Image (cartoon, rainbow over all chains, first blue to last red; front, side):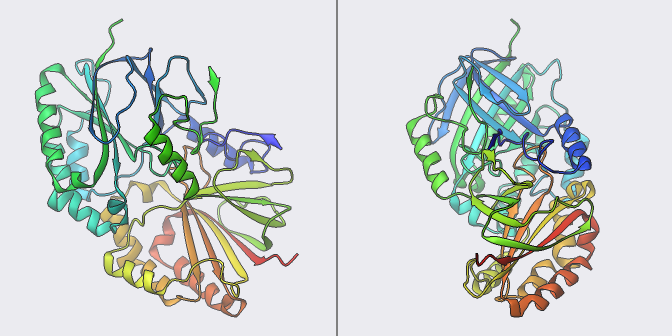
Length: 217
Length: 217
């Protein structure tokens, strides 16, 4: 047995008998990674200024958040928790909605956006037993998820990470990362209140809200 | 640094500071695993009787297929390739379609179903750039994917495994596993011909068809 790390990075390594063209694709995939790891601990680009468990269990307290592109194969000293997710295709938006989003959504890393939120969410078994048309109906026709999000553009930048299909035992289904300027904090609070009041949120069985500011140190 | 395997099994281990309730969920998740590993090599419950690359690169030749529930953390001696995927919620079916599927689809492992096929597929970037409504339109309204599959029930049992969001460098997006009796082999061949003639298949950039019989030895 050759010991290998079975992570997103290690399937079909050189020497596993997979052809050269495929290995090239592996290499390209690593360079354009969709996987992000969020580490709560003593180091990181972002200072944690608050953590609330909205529903279900909380996460252990940590001082800083370190966002790493790609997989982390060892838990650094001082890290209290590790969450990871992968960016993917959107599951609910229609073409007209997508076009509105694309035309209005800002990128991450704006210098003025020194506030952030990491919101890990898990939905319940009832949600995942719904069919696609039923989930879409709750998500948009009943809850106006995309329409509500659009109202807060371009103030709030957002990146959604999927965890549910990353492995069999991820603690959350989604990690949503938001960035906004301090002046838009109150607007961001309203966005959360609006979304949490919708029928979609009846399917949320675990939600933690971690608020952060860019670490000047 | 404590070295840990970052796989579906290892996020939020005891000692990582994640609460006890969450650890219990991890344990439950391991017992009801959605993750399956397919190993092509010298051992396994299924004998490989043919392997065709339909489009794109082939897989290395192997004699047997071993299907393992859960993650494999070391590549066994003699294994030529490893593919893995996770069962997940359906992405396209409506409630009426789902009800028809549920009422007619057989389970895996029927004693009379001694033939099988493993069909790994990757769809191209154009497919993944489509919005949900556009993908549904190609999948069902144009290609009748579910309706065609329904015609071959209950002869053909099927389990779909998703790989695309498992990690950043999986060689395929889906692994579909089929089981059927020898008497239904010709019907299964027709199912493949029907599906491959549809508009949906214009988005398939890699497809391998591996045919198997249950290994008596």
